[in-house]
Amino acid sequence: MSRLDWPGMMRAGLHGLGLKPDEFWKLTPAELFVMLGVGQDGAPLDRARLQDLMQRFPDTKKDLDDG
Image (cartoon, rainbow, N blue to C red; front, top):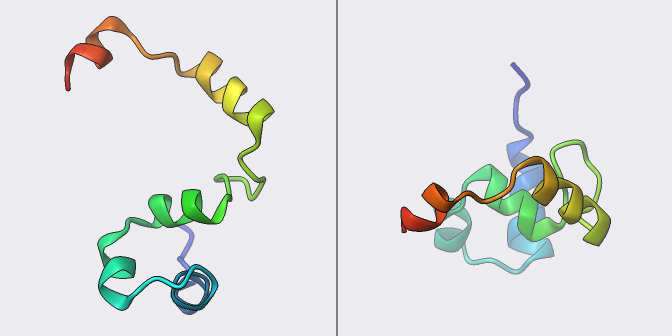
């Protein structure tokens, strides 16, 4: 299991993005990574990457009816 770099994440969120402490702590690490434009593999989420994810994980009728 990889450990999260909390000091680095806090610097990125609080200083880089200008989040307030309560805003930072309400985020999940995944949400923070999205806000920073970083994918799980460290690559930015550009249009091509988004298209790839949409093809690999398409919305289904069930997903859309859930909420």
